[in-house]
Each structure stands twice: as C-alpha cells, then as structure tokens.
Length: 338
Image (cartoon, rainbow, N blue to C red; front, side, top):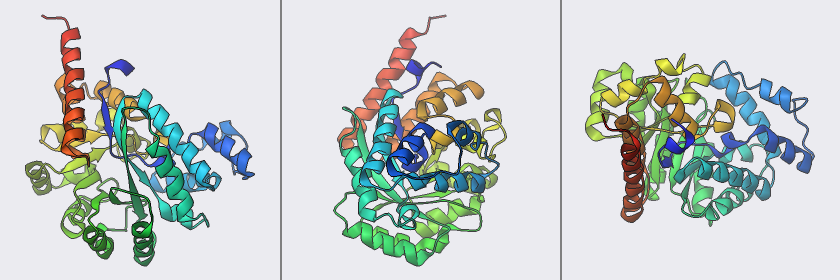
C-alpha cells in the first residue's frame, strides 16, 4: 500500500505533544533557551527505544520543557497539521494534556491559545476539534479544577479524555470529573484497555459513560465485553505502531486488529504519538494492512469506522463518507479484473 493508496483519514486518537519531532524540539529549545538532557538530535533519537509506557512517558514529559509560550504550542500544532494533510487526514480531533503544562508553570491560556489558534487555521478542506485530556496518574481534585478552568475559557473544545499511565489508575477514579463534564454537555472519551485490563474498558463505559474507547485492545480478553462492544458499535480507536513500540503487542503481525474486525468491533486506525512511535496515521494504515494482509474491504471498513466515530455534524459526516467511498471506488477501478 503506497502513500497514495491509504484512505482519506479521520484521526481521532493523536496527542499533540506526541507530534513533537526531534528537529522541532531542538528549534524550540534554542529559541527559548531551554537545556535538554540529550546531547544532540542523534542522542535524542536514540532515547526513543522504549521498554514500556512508563519509559515512554518519562521522555515524553521531559521533551515538553521546550513548550513554554502560545507560539511554541502553535508551532507544534501547525507542524502536525501540515504532516497530517500530506497523509490524507480530512478531520482531526486533537488531544492536549493541560495538566502536563500547568505543572511546569505554563498558563492554561498559552496552551489553549496556541493549539486552538493553529487548529482554526488548519489546511483547506480539513476540519478540526480539540479534546483536552486529564492525566489519570494525577489527583482527581486537580482534574476537577482544570475542567472548571476549561469551561470558563473562551476556547471551544469538543469534549474531554483520560490518558497517561493506565495500570493502577482505573477509569472509575474519575467518575465525578466525567459526571461534571457530561452536565456541561461535553463529549466523553477515555483511554482504556491498552496496558490495563478489559475491566477498565467496562468501567469507562459503565462508570464514566464514554462514547469512544481509546485503544481497547485488551477487550478481546473478555468475550462478553466483545459481544457488548460489537452489538453497541462502540468505537475503538486503535494505534498499531504505538502498541508495538510500547510492547503492548510483540509485532505488527501479532496485532489483534484483524481479530477485532472479525469480531465485528468498530475499530479504526490512528497514530497516538507519531513522532515517538514511528509513523503518522497513513503510516499506520500502510503498515498494518501489509503486516496483517488486510483486504481492500477491511481497509475501507477501518476508514469508515473512523468517520462514524467522529464528533461531527451530519453534513460533515456525509462529506467524509463520500470521500472514503470515492477513494474505494478509485481503488476498485484501478485493480485489474480477473
């Protein structure tokens, strides 16, 4: 599958901080006078051999030191949007982690102004939305304070999410946060079932009331949960290259994505933290299609599932459906008849 053969993409699981490429880290560090722990870009890239989620998060948060001003956040977001457009992204709902920056003394206004401002100037034809996430390994009281500040801000955002270190931090801890967000009319998503157990997926659905599960690959460990997810068509935003780099899955050939499709789950493919995990959304589509020998119909289903899971209005969803259908028709026309 070449770059031209990847489908028009709806990206629903990508963290803006995870799009921070080493070259931009160096540029922002020089601009802001920030000292980095790595000696140079080669040393920084060498640190990207992660052993697990915790190892990754240590570097991920260290690199955020270069993000200090609204312009820094805007530069990072613009760089992602340009690369996403090249990869065929037509709609993106971008995650941002306010607490990771507030803890460093960066004002919430700088984070939101920079990211939202860049999203508002996205490439022509691309629609965007913003989803701030709470860090599940920080206090619930802090998340409640951040939610209040987000609601009071002038920046429009779609909903809220839950991310960071999963094991030992069940979704149910954040029941009050999500109840308040629901009362504000916000859309609800949460990371669950990546390194954590299938039970975390159930908690995210039953306790938090989420509409989408980010990751969810451990759902296969619970047959009753699989049936429930399939019957309700609960979207699962899966990140194959991330799962391999973080050792949640041994190799792409071992990835459960094909089994999830066979089980009738509403799975779709996304990039998570592309600067760290070796690929953007088109790279993920290409890699998993090859490794799992997905059929053209399966690739189309993945793209369609992402369209159906997006928080867009009916008119935009119809446009996105039409783009995927046109792409699929073009591929069908390009295949020689037998």
